[in-house]
Length: 164
Image (cartoon, rainbow, N blue to C red):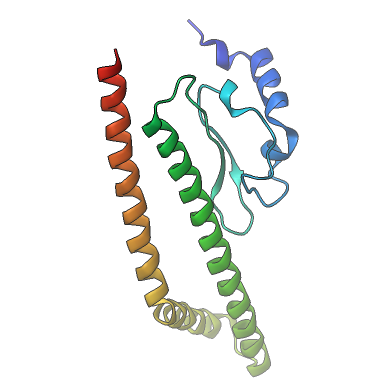
């Protein structure tokens, strides 16, 4: 037995309704970019990775009759995804910028490919050491947000159970 959402004609219809921009991965992938009615989606849609942050784009499904905790969870999830995307976009831009400068320095010195790989590993370590505090703050905030969403999800589930 095949699921309705896996049939080719339904996939084409659904993909067309989501929008070409989301599926093709053009644009910066921010939530403000997609114009759609999320209430009609019953499942989350995951798109192609953002070219800079390397995080996948999401179209979040909405429940038809959400309780107050469901609404809080939806908002927290979207804010966390946007925050995460913003952090990794900044971080990766910074990394590529510094890597480009480092590569130019290596080219100016005339270092061979084998020596360059050793130098590059030292650059990676230097970059990580230099941004250690930033990564620590990111990890703390990531855990705080995710445990907060976990608590809200538990409350939302309990509310749904006792609503019946």
